[in-house]
Image 1: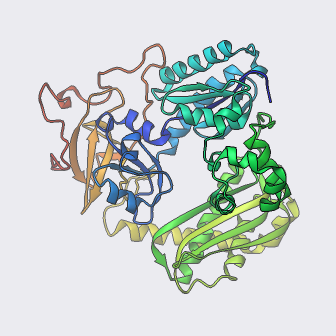
Image 2: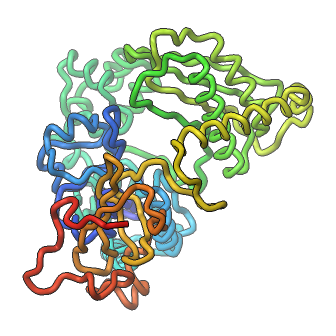
Image 3: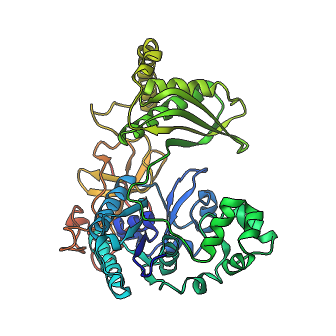
Length: 490
């Protein structure tokens, strides 16, 4: 435990949803839900306006729609979120060489390692300056917690939400933690909380009063001893600049259960290729291939195979994933599939390539044929797109688009051969809505625009950047809140 609150924890406020509100002026101050939009989707982030209705992360999207049918339900745009995250992490690295990212929107910072004096006034000043810099650079808000330990700094940032700063002075930990629920402590999930509840332990103070021996009896030596120390406010974990990933995986949930064995196999092979792409992007290889299969009844099975050495060869991983699938009965229907690689390393075992050399050419040929058949089926007999143009088969709500005449906008909805687009930018007033045919040649996917134009020196402007002046609403003019306000003749 440190004698000064020099560990900082930053947690961006409702990150994904707040980024969407910043990018879409018409959604500011309104409930926004980001996540899977299909019938089996899950909420990733809900804006504070949506949380009023009881919507929370990890909730099924179908349930969220029942609670708040008028919210904007948007597909995640990870390209934008990563751009914002990189800008925030750059600000954190300017404070200290010891920055421990936990996710895109959350990190610990060791201010003492950055030369900040171990005084409450000094660290508070750094935290306030950081909040202002984040707002200037990204247009978003973050909450900051400062304490002498990582656990306490995280609790402080949670108490500071939204858009606040809380400092926990060393020596006040037990007084602060005592009345909090035991679920506040790291590592206490539903199962542990239920075990403690049966023993009459509900709060952090009651956890400390139970004593280490009782907690060890209830939870085992490692978990019990660790929980007792945290209940006393003790946490000596250092801020670690590099967090080594233990595995890399991808998974997909399907709107309709897959019952065709050939389709299930093709999806597993596709996921294996995506997993290899992530593996190579991280500069890693792995020796254990894992598949995950969730059946129609929500039962979940995993199967794994350990190779002779680490590899990042797609053919090797595809072959292993296909073998593992043969061990699973999928006749009842599959709702989710996943492929992962663990046992990560920084090198590859070259002799592994030989075991699939004879199959590689055949597999690549089959893959090309399947892609051609898929493209032909998706085309539905319509005219092909220009070579090199990538157009999504479906226009998902929230995604960026550009129209040759009207400029930049985002998809508000689509269906029955039509796509509705709201034309606005992060710097404009709420924009108008127009509707087009889904195959309108003038409409194409776009790239996320920066949330703040011109950077910190310029800040946000109320003037539109790409939206033509003729489309900007005048005083008292309807901004096109109704879907399908105008139908394009294109």
